[in-house]
Amino acid sequence: MADPMKIRATLAGDSTEVKVLMNHEMETGQRKDAQGKTIPAWHIQTVTATYNGKTVLSAQWGPAVSKNPFLAFKFKGGAKGDKVQVTWVDNKGDKRTDEATIG
Amino acid sequence: MRAVHRRAACRAALVAALVAPGAYGQGSAVDEIAKYRAALQDGNPAELWEARGEDLWKKPRGPKNVSLETCDLGLGAGVVKGAYAQLPKYFADADRVMDLETRIVWCMVQLQGYTQADAVKNPFGGPDRKSDMEAFVAYVTAEARGVKMNVALNHPKEQEAYRLGEKMFYFRGGPHDFACMTCHGDDNKRIRLQDLPNLTKPAGAQLAYTTWPAYRVSQGELRTFQWRLNDCFRQQRFPELVFTSDASIALTMFLAHNANGAAYNAPAIKR
Image 1 (tube, rainbow over the protein chains, first blue to last red):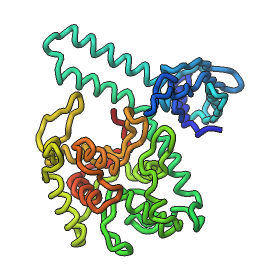
Image 2: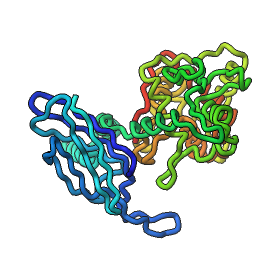
Image 3: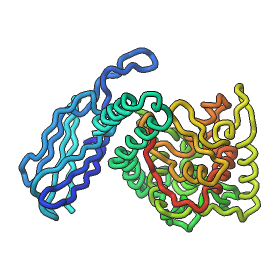
Image 4: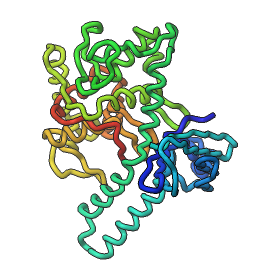
C-alpha cells in the first residue's frame, strides 16, 4: 500500500467536516524530464469516502489536481466516535485506505 | 482542493486589477498572495513529512539497528520537544557547534553506525527519491512549535560561529558581487513577487527564521534551513554550500540567534 493519508473528522452541528491530506506525486503525464522524455502520468483517479458503510463522497480526479492533494468536505450526519473511511485508487491501480474517528 | 483555491485567488486578483487600474502593483498582488497562503495553511503537506519523520526516528535502523530515540539534541538524550529552538549549539561530545541537521548526522553515525558518507547522502529529496533527513527535520521542528527561540552564545565556539556567520552575511563575492545583505539588508525589497525579509532587523530576522523548514509548493517538497542556505548560494551563483559544513552552521548560528525571542512557528508552507 502507498504512504498513509492524514484524515481529520470533526462534528460541527449536525454535519461532519472531514479534511484529508493525501500523499501522492500526481504526475500529469505532460511533463518532460531532463532528457526530453515524457514523465508518465501517475495520479489518483477515484476517491471514495464512506461513513457507516454508506458512501458520502465519490470523486473522479484527473491531472489538474496538485501534488499531495488536500481534500475538505462536509456531510450531514455523523456522531462522535464513529469512523470515516477514505479510499483512493490511482491510474497504476495502486490504492490506499485510511480511516479517522469523528472527534 | 488546492487547485480550486489557486484559481479563486487568480480570479480575485483579476477583479482587483480591473477595479483599480494603476493601483495594481505591489499592494494588491501581495494581498492576494497573502490570501492564497492563508487558504493553504489548512492541509499543509508538511504534516506528511512530520509523520514519516516520527516513524523513521523511532524505527531501529542502520548497522547497529537502533532507533534515534536516545539522540541528544541539546536538551538531553531523548528530548525532542523544544530542541530546535536552542540550536545551533556547542556539543561537548563532538567539540563543535552543530545545527539540527549536523546533529542528526552525528546521531546517525554514533548511535546507528552509519558511515558519515551514508548519513549525509540525499539531504534534499525529489520526485524519485525521498529524503529521510527532510522527514527527520520536519518531525523534530514540529516538536518546537510555539517555543521561544533561545539560541545561546555562551561557549567561545558558539560566539566564534556567530561572528563568522555575521562576516559571511556581509561578505560580497561570487560573479555578481552579491552578499546576503544585498537582498536581505534593507526594508521593502522584493524580487519579482517574492518579498525579501530584512534580516538585519529583529522583525525580519524573526519572521524568516521561525518559518523554516517549510513545504515549498513550487518544489513539492519539505525544505529545511540547510536547503534554504544552499539555494541562496545557488541563486547568488556562489560555489555550492556543502551540506552541514562549518560555513553553513556559522551562517545558521548568526540567523538563528538573531531570531531569539520570537515564537517558533514551523513547519510552515511557502510558495
